[in-house]
Amino acid sequence: MTQHSALSTQHSLVGVAVATLAAAAYANALANGLVWDDPIVLERQLLAFRSLGDLFFPPANIPQFSPDYYRPLTVLSYLVDRTVGGTSPFVFHLSVVLWHIATTYLVFRLGLALFAGLPEALSASGFGAALFAVHPIHTESVAWGAGRSDVIAACFAVAAALVYLQSTWSPLRRAAVAAALVFIAMLAKETAAALLLILPLGDLLLERTLTPAARPTGRAERRRQRQVAAPAPSSLLCYAPFVVVVLVYLALRRAALSSVLGGAKPLGADVIVDAVAAVGVYISKLLVPIRQCAYISDLPTSPLGLLGSAALIAGVLAATAYAWRRNQRRVFFLLVWIGMTLAPSLAIVVKIPAAPIAERYLYLPSVGFCLLVGYLAAQVTERARARKLRVVVLIGCGLVLTIATIATVARNAVWRSNLDLWQDTAAKNATDALPMRSLATAYQQLGDAAKATEHFQVALQRRNDQSGLYLIYNNLGSIAMVDKRLDEAEQDYRAALAANPNASECLFNLGLIALTRATDASAAPDAARQHEQALHARQLFEQALTLSPLDPDIHVGLGQTLSTLGDGAGARTHYERALQLGLPAPTAASVRKLLDELK
Image (cartoon, rainbow, N blue to C red):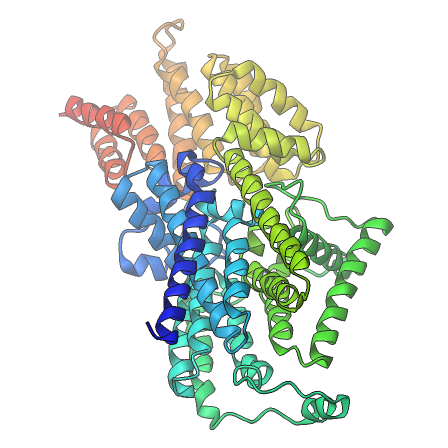
């Protein structure tokens, strides 16, 4: 066996090992159910996507679909999952775990390309990819089905970086393929756009290290090399693919969303303070991912918190400056990767101040972090002259991976169900109402109305915006309605509607109350009163349908109301439309029975 063949075999074995480690760390996530936004995605939003054109140009009025997101590839992955497994949680989670396994392997290959020519290239890449496989900060992205956008985007972004570092290709070919992969990554999540800057910068930052040379021994010689400008690319034409990708993406986004950046909010005077605090939290979670939380609503903006964030940022900047001065271009490049891939997520501090940061935003930046840790660990091991010191370092690396794996497996279980998730989150976030009201909703879905009501009342005492108040009162109304306390339910729904006058769901619920009163045979017969309630129900359902025309439940309610009013043709039209939009099997069977009765 030749030396090259032996090295290739080693690379393959280590690549399989890190991929297997990623699979093992997330095996228990395959038992997770549908939590948080998962049912909304599978059972409501996907109904609106009926063609390839809908992926790139989403229809209007999709239930709870963000107007700022442009993620055709992520939506396509949902559709593939639904085609393969229906609404099965297993397939929904399996696909994300497979994406993570693929990304882990690509991180390993990227490390080999980045550290090529160094004696510790294999160990640095292997440990870096292994850390990426099991880093607990990834659980929100991998163990939660709807968190997949970061994983898919990172997979293609890392593939783009790997292609761009292939020195055997011509500059134009590297740029064209890499730019295409970045474009695909951006169709999964917008933050991948950072690669359009990082990769061209790699020409400047990595040109000397990708062609290893003997390290200069004198300080004067090292200073002279640092002052020599990196050779320019053979032609600016090699950067044309990146420009084309930017223009095409912006044009698509503009056509689909009617804007490039989405809704803008005015910048407050404290935006810099919030950004500093957010960066400090992100750095600390990369370094030591403890007390992980699915919903982070408050930044550490106290004097002590800001001091800690400033210290972490200063440390990173100092490390970056040191790497540049010492001609550690690989280190410098990885630090730039972390910073530039994290930067787009800081816009959330302004756009969504109620939830300014999220752990899943660290998935792509962690590629640079994990490879950097792997490189530093390999350097220490390589330069340790004493065998005992090497053993200590290796044991330390193994201990880090073991602890990280255990933490990841434990954190995966938090995403097992809504009850597990929101019990954990509500205990860690005691200021914002969202975790508590989500916990209340989990109890409500389990049929425990008493606990649900208790937790909704606690949520009312926490910080709520108008949307939060709407959700609480709307759910309290639903609990009262199930118990047939219609007057109390109507009072709660009215309070919900006051918080959100354009809430189609609330109008739908009020319509159901009016329809129930119009068809209640047990009530004292009052034909005029029942007819009045039926007319009121029709008005409410029509208002709801104007706001949410793709909601099949509203069509069913309106069909039942029109049938009560004697409009069989109108009822038939709405029943058929509800079936076209898609209904759960039991509801669809009931609607078909109603259609038969109309005949």
